[in-house]
Image 1: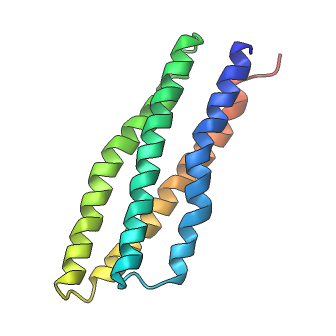
Image 2 (image 1 turned 90 degrees about the vertical axis):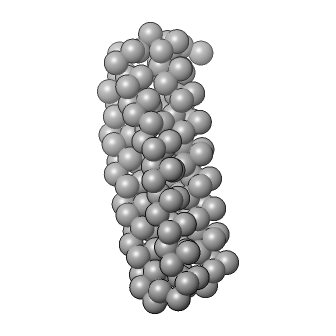
Length: 141
């Protein structure tokens, strides 16, 4: 496989966790997040998303470096760094809201919903950025 083919394959692999999350996360808009098992399932989905994104981003960074596209390696490296930082911050926020809901805070489910919307919006921005960068990473010559 040529270096261009490898980089395009890497970009497509980076899209897998983002696409999965883009398709699966809106389903949680149809349920109440004050039901603890549902909220825990949402937390698990975000946890898996951030873990997958950090691993795939790190692999993508290595692939771009190995194929000699050092400038393009910055993108997957930033995605991996965001996923690592985002997982720590986001899951801490979700845990705080789950604890607050368990303690009887009536607004905890609403704040959890806002976190959910924020996560979906952030993922959508990442997907758009990644898809729009594909022609620049593997130009047709």
